[in-house]
Length: 602
Ligand code: F6R
Image (cartoon, rainbow, N blue to C red; front, side):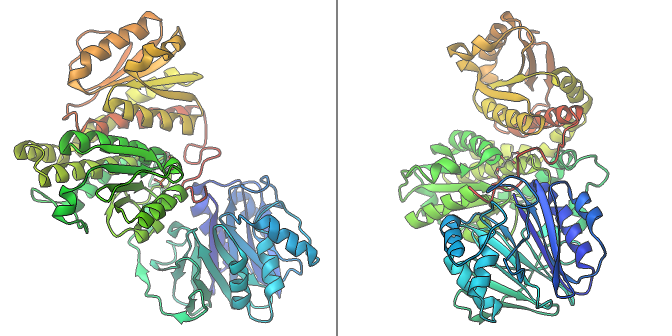
């Protein structure tokens, strides 16, 4: 989604903004722009091409204050006129905005009645004009009056051309942080935009305001009362968000699966104990009647894996729902339920809205989050962090694996606490989990095989991912990975459901990927494969079981692991196959079309 960076200091604002915008590219964008103040005027540059184009159009490095934006079109096409920053009629105020102004039509009418004119189709353009309308010599007050009139979500960076010593920022339901440097300060929608310059950040809460000067930042609450905000240190370095020799972030992140698993497990396992710092009493845990897992996209698929292992080990029913559905479904929640939210970014709008709903109902919840200090982290009393580090590629890979690991740990923890499974068995499972990164390493080493298979399917129009039980969940994730970065239509299906309809699609030239990691289902899976083969479709079998009958066309042998943990290893070849197909098709693997890394609007 859209990205914001802003700077005030002594460096070239143009350079800082361009480097910040490059760091935000991964979020997905279709136009971008910057504005600086020079000689009492705004210097504005915009493009519907890439940041490189924006950089090459810049005249000289002359300013030390500015704001920049990457836009992911919502209101109005990706044109220069619609690109941010947006300027007020008299060209006194200029604004970058993330989010959506829901009442912009009414506000536009009001401004038009007062003689304001509009040049773009955006919702954003009302904001600089409202500031102009509300201005009586005090920018902060004008911004506050303006945000009082806005409905929807926003993170804003605002400049006044007549005051090159001040940058104003505010937010509501869209993330924005303040970066604190030595003699320089920053705003950013995402820490990666400013990590090169500072590790100290302040986090703005909803309806709070920051007034940035070169040497200080003042914070104001919604009544414009000044307050003190303690800066926090973020332990991420510029190197963590470099490609480090890999051709794409996605490939780097797939290879980081091993360190991600280790870091995540090490964080929670001490000796033979799983240590979760949760505000949930033994009694509350014992009384859990039902668990609801709520997330979006890939995180939902991790949730489905959680359902499998929690139900099998702890014998508690688990209901997995997409947050975009949950929030509108008037969900049936009882006081003894536990809701688990999963989010890599911690900023996904539907997941945040679902948390608000659960908080209103007073039901216990915990959140599994990858980004510390993100909105979901701050909203949640109980947080289990995945230790995947920054995930830059739009397609989630290592964060998914980390989410599955945390859910596996949670299932073992719960089963142990509630005495729902044999202690020795749980210990063996935990020991196996502690070692699973070595199995993942083995799977990563077979990359030639995945590349060869990618070459086979690169020209296909449709691919089918099939599995029973937990393998169907992994199939869903494999299918999503392929479609989002290769643009090949793919579908995941329950293997047993094939003959109830979808087998009509099986014919010569169709490729299917069949997963099989559950011992008790091998016979059924083999029969299903025969049915597919009888219709002349081809089968790639992905399995760690001893399947002697050569019913398949190709096979990926996975290392043996307990079937409860198999999703962690089974997804790796699917991630790499999707990656190779996208590379073979010469596509923008890390920034697939139409997609954004964190979906901060509905
Ligand atoms: C797919 C992908 C998305 C995200 C989804 C939720 O590869 O990345 O489906 O999983 O948008 O995002 P988070 O986890 O940030 O809430």
